Length: 386
Image (tube, rainbow, N blue to C red; front, side):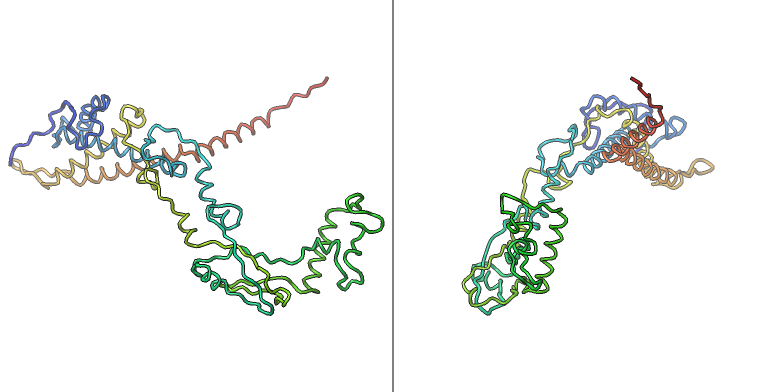
């Protein structure tokens, strides 16, 4: 087997010695690469024990550690800000952006509620009508849709314009319905009865009385008169009461939307815009701009990766014969330690980022404000005597 040289105790980094070259031209990365290599080698036992790695192995681990740090950082930033980033330009790098929360995407998501309630939204409502026929109570709106070039399964009725006379009309002008006098007489003091003229004089009563009176009118009409109502099941419209011959020819109006338009309007093709977490434009971090807290984590993660590399190298041979004995290598110890260290470092970094999320910081600010207010409440208040 060829005599492959191992780490001699020092190295000299130059661009091109890492697999991807993400940070090779960063001056601070160049300065730290050899220091990190020496740090890892000494932590692994050099010069007391040989470290069966070369300088490029340390550089590879260093590059990977910086990249993992950037991935964790920007994944956290993306989780915290994705609702504000969706729809932004993918050509704009977000690494150094300060993102202010906006209602824009929340409103866009909420437009569906406006559509269903008929108070806005992004789906068109259309108007249509069927012509009433005396003694015909049932009307097939799917058949109406087919006759107007619309697929019946694509039709969704949103509103039917069929309402009875409002209670307020009977409140002032109604005829007798079983109480011995007309509603207009019963509530005449509110209008042009007993000497009080409309628009010139008013008999003022509590609003709660008016509401109760209207409710009484509505209940009386529900019980004592024919109810104006309709039933809509699977686009089959049934009208109550049954139209009479006098109703023939009247247009019965309704509003509807088309289901395929609702679906189409919910999907926006947006080339060049952020549409998912994979195309939000976060690039690899700039190593020079990473502070000492981040670099300390990177050094430790580089060491964990280096342990893993050394474990795989030493795992090629379980034992190494020497004169009169044999040496057992510590592959399993290195791999177990590397796995545990990498897991602990990732968990620590994520916990650190979570503690600095927008939600956590706002909660901390609230707690500080509550404690400050609690202290102020215990401060004696000065009484001013003029």
